[in-house]
Image (cartoon, rainbow, N blue to C red; front, side, top):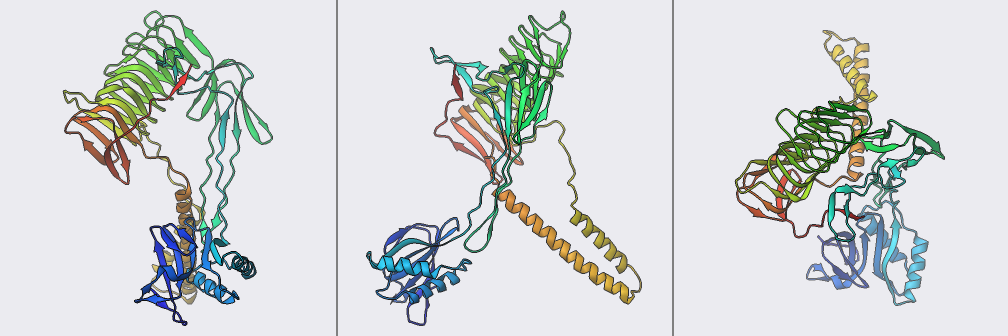
Length: 515
């Protein structure tokens, strides 16, 4: 609402959500402006007669001025500007001498000031995450493309994990803390916390610190592994044929390469990666690294596959598997139970029946089939078989607050109180108030830092070709059951506690790298 000032003019605080023209320039919103008019027209603001406008930038770090300068003198205009800034509750004072000079300069150059910055806040300095910088591509997830035919080989990756003894694997670049800023209203602008990757040294890796930077070297020739924050170079055991009755069960601390098939009933355990050049019949497989199968995997009831890293195969049929990373399949997943801490990627294949869960989303060709096979797709769930239940540590302030409350209750339970008791209870009440305020301030600071820290995008399910009836898409407590056949491309996104299904206009080709 416009209010008359003592000189009979009108001033108003305006929230501009569309582009509006003031003399000498255009201001676009949403921004907050305090405008001063020299006239009233029918009791309303006449925008074309606004003498000056004081604006606050969207990031709250600048206050700008747009005005017509007076023919002579500037003190009156500056007084009015200061008054308007006070109404906006700007905490930073203007430099009158500097503004006087600007006004004098503008008077000699057309009589206008447009977008002049009056005061600036202190911008925050963003934090810099610590980065594990690899010396070359050991773990590239891109598929290799034949440079002649252009065909993607879904069984070859761009990463080359073989290393020599003494080879530098990676450097850990230190983090840099951010610095909070202050806006023009005097309020603190929080910054997030930098991330620090955890690096636990596994087999055959040594750490040298040079100029404050950790350097990680291979202590032996082998195959480098980076899974679950463990960096290791594994010894490689190669089996030239099949794993079955002749070889017996296989257990190896390092990496394992099997050039044939894994026959039914086998049990394989490896600390590092497992590469299988053939197919896998119903067997138990456990690895702390990645599992790569050139052909497919066929499972059976009671047979389980546990992978610390990513699982990759041509197809999965009736498989019960859990992976600490992604599950990547070329052609089809049939009636399988899968859990991935990463994503399930099968952009050119079909998923029929079963229960598939992936914490970070899915990319599928088809889901379900024309026979309405019940197919459950879940995203965002914690897929670990046993969740870590680590109790929250009590802070010293919280511990003292609980103790103070117990002491106060003990005094309150007394049938009679002495003057000394009452004095002690008063002290305890005051201490409780101080501790509660300190804890609340700490909680609010944690919330501010959490809000300022960049968050990962919400997980989503992409179905590129077709989504069939009786497919169920789940996330948290939300669920969508498909009742009719739906052509792709589609994506399901969980956001703001709601699960929505959308048409996706454009989907990029799966990641590929030229050989």
